[in-house]
Image (cartoon, rainbow, N blue to C red; front, top):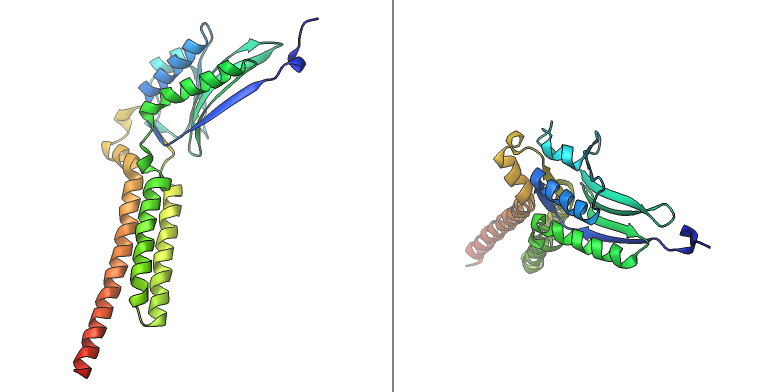
Length: 240
């Protein structure tokens, strides 16, 4: 008696990827990689979240895009195996998460295909330095160090509270701004439609936000230092 899908296990292997910046050529290269994993099968390229466009890889490569960039791309191919279930490999890049996923009745293939796909994305992945877990944590760590070091020198309790509250708000701002404004993926479809400034800003947004947060915290600290310095000079003049 032939085995059916009920007698087998479908394995899924998923790998997350960091912040990605890629252009149309990169999408085509990823599609060609998937095509090599599925000889003779069509590779589908889906772009856009709100208004999706789905094209075969061969048509996508030759097409003229209507938009300079997009917020989402999914590249996928599959074929039937076992009792009608799909062996599938997909790469999904979007605003919330970037990942590769492979599924098959063959566990070794699923794990291997996911790892190979993840390696294909490495040239388009920004260094870990740009992530909040690295750069954002360093910025907030510096602000927190300033808070710990300087707050005890503020004798006036309301002023000390205001200083501490202000720097905590800045640290929260840094975290929220990273989540809101640092793109998880920047997908360029037609570089002629997107200015060089826009591309630079999208690539280095985390650095810009980090510097902004650090500058505001430094400004507040300097202002408090000046206030305390003037108060000390005033008291010294009175009692000298």
